Amino acid sequence: MSYKWLNKVCWDEYGLVPVIAQEASTNEVLMFAWMNRDALTKTVELGEAVYWSRSRKKLWHKGEESGHIQKVLEIRLDCDEDVVLLKIEQIDGIACHTGRHSCFFQKFEGDANAGEWQAVDPVLKDPESIYK
Amino acid sequence: MSYKWLNKVCWDEYGLVPVIAQEASTNEVLMFAWMNRDALTKTVELGEAVYWSRSRKKLWHKGEESGHIQKVLEIRLDCDEDVVLLKIEQIDGIACHTGRHSCFFQKFEGDANAGEWQAVDPVLKDPESIYK
Image (spheres, each protein chain N blue to C red):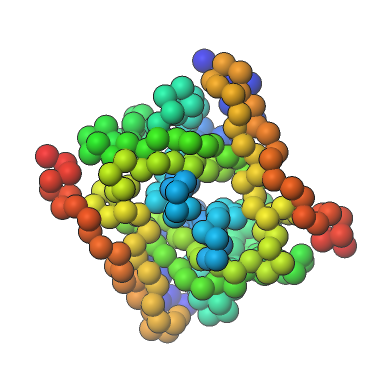
């Protein structure tokens, strides 16, 4: 399976492309992950985000365990054709495995000499009840 | 130079971390790039985005040629501590080297069998007048 539009994407040395998932309704950045050709094809076919899990080395239909599916409303490619941006609707409003809305919940506070990362966003659902 | 907060970041096998630049006022995703420890440190110290250019293999103070500086208002780290999100003010409203607001100006249209990437956002400034 190799579509012409897939060949416009500059896949990296591992055959992957970085993907940013942005909530369409708020423009919030919820997640970052990777796709290979198969994942991007399935995302287009299904209309739901399918990533490549680098740790598990397999396709990962986001929400397959948690139910936190991402409906894909729009797909964009950047100027260098090596980064994909998804505009999504996040089912249940939880993208993060910690039960938060967004994965980017740690904020840098302080300065270079005395900086720290603070978790500033609330947990909306106990992860233990998400992954039963 | 190695600050404690820098060690919380999971640097990849090249000593890099992916970085998403998001416009603070609109939440639009403007750009994607990479940082090493030095780049992130300088970003924090300067309050302006400093990336690592993988092609030129050197620090890249965004806007150093174009004037399209990115003032950094907030820095976030994701749940796995391996992706950074910057909330920025984009000077002149142009992040892309093509003279567009955002680098993500190519939109997927069609379906898997007949898909294509269409440039859908306007060029705000001729790149030749940006890079004199």
